Image (cartoon, rainbow, N blue to C red):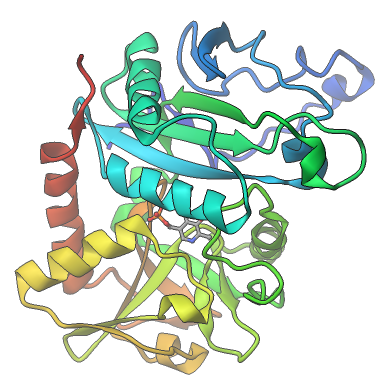
Length: 329
Ligand SMILES: Cc1ncc(COP(=O)(O)O)c(C=O)c1O
């Protein structure tokens, strides 16, 4: 994967003390490389805006309360990967939080495709949000009469290519994945503070990702990725009931494994299982499929990305380039 000209989300931040003295309007102080697209066009409620003019109200409950939902979607080689699955999951999230998406799924499909066209991209990432909309300062969503739809197209590489070759290190974090009775992780909501706190722990520990456990102490997922391990030629991943998102990349791995004749079992996984696994990898739309070589200081397998992971990554790269909803009208 080419990482020049793209937004690398995990780039180290360069500390610039001179920047601290300057107080500028929020819009002006945004990082320059936000979408990575020159003259980006951002969709908000049926219209396209430049990055500088793409604004929503400070009274939107998406901002005030994290009240809204989102999807992260990739497109490769002129096709949107698993668009239908992403939209179905978006609609499920909406139904779960009693949010009415103000358009049909067919119109949403067209809006996503048109946003990519407007930004003249063939490969990249879409962030699609539906916010509860403008209300007052009370949290009652009945105040919000019109949900907003925002679609941002970006170039993206979550990790440098080196990570795919050498693998990531992960640490178990103390922050538990939200209990489904409090906020079900199956809802891809704008409230990601649980995951952000886990990510802060990984950063503080100098690791690349955080392994999140559920209330029972079993592995749920990482901060924005599903977790898989390989042991004795079989693949294991936690069930959705453990607090894992029903990841779309996860389901692609199930399909690829079936093609390759490798058995996948959805079962509870403990930290011990991760430590003694032959291989471990993470899956997510942004991260794609990335090997893990160290967990809590223990080398996984021989400390290098394993052969099953490599075969799955190779096939995944083929599938993503060859299938999907065509972008061109
Ligand atoms: C918490 C969480 N888990 C897992 C995933 C991976 O899901 P997907 O493969 O659908 O991107 C994501 C990303 O969407 C996520 O936010």
